[in-house]
Length: 81
Image (cartoon, rainbow, N blue to C red; front, side, top):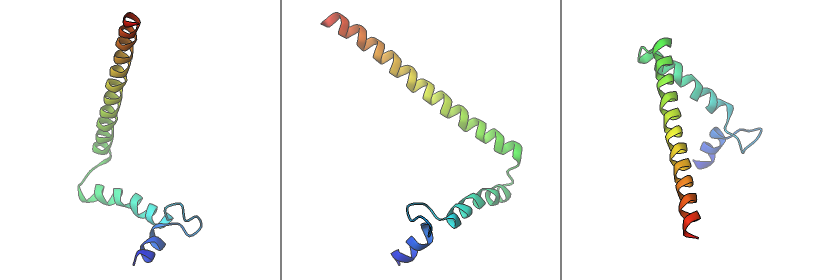
């Protein structure tokens, strides 16, 4: 059974890569979901923009925290040595 699953999931040309059939199925799922949920192009763009904003602001916050922590640590270590 596991050999059959591996045969289906992995590429015949390069066993280290995912099969093109699986990639095609995964890409084909999105249009079907859009059809089933009545998601139009404008709604999809809004959703993608919302995700983009969440990622941007999250990474900005993490970066800001890292800069502040590094700066404060540098000041602390400068005065304690």
